[in-house]
Length: 258
Image (cartoon, rainbow, N blue to C red; front, top):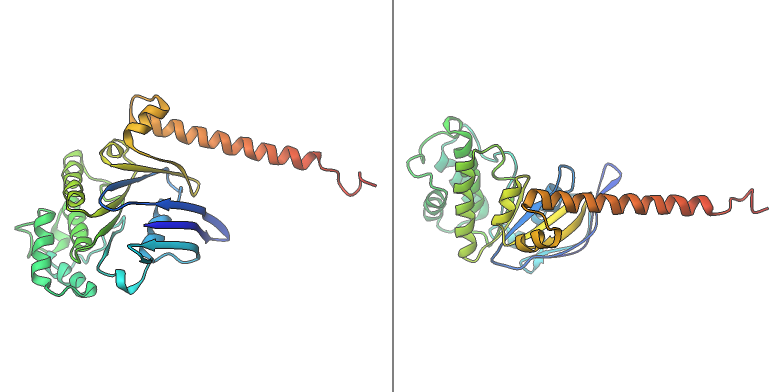
């Protein structure tokens, strides 16, 4: 995945402005950042569903959102993107049909096995627990056999056991050679990633690894390391704004120049 000069404008203001990014294949990449930092907007741009986008976003050697990527990219949104009145299998058959999967029965069975939903195939989604619904959403993203998985806060609201189980699934998928871009607010999840992208105010604060993050900041854990980087970025932004204001105040006005 290669991103150059990405700019996204919403409501008349830039949400992401001039972002540059390269993501290699076969790794788990954590996308971290406070609310409003642009994580979901970036993910939507990568899967090709975000409007008001300029710059280039190339995914698997094709432009983001290209028909050729329909089966090659899987997207799991924050809210469960499945139908409550359908069973698990009915949902997965539907998403397999959308992706144009040539052997849907086999693909559905494989997705069910991957997310450990065996025994729930004929159960309506509305009767499942929150964690089980999250796994159905993940299965829906997997059923096309994608090479890239874009997962927007897939563990939000889940208890520690379910989060651990989902991360075990993510590691297995990466071991198969797939690339996962996973956003999260849970900082201990950052330590399970191969690479970390830390965002603030629509830009990248850091592109690093978990070990490098701790070494660079000297913090004892990921949460305090992340906060240190965010605070430093905020201080730099404030200093830059003050410098611009001071420069503007020293410029002669038309009246004083006369």
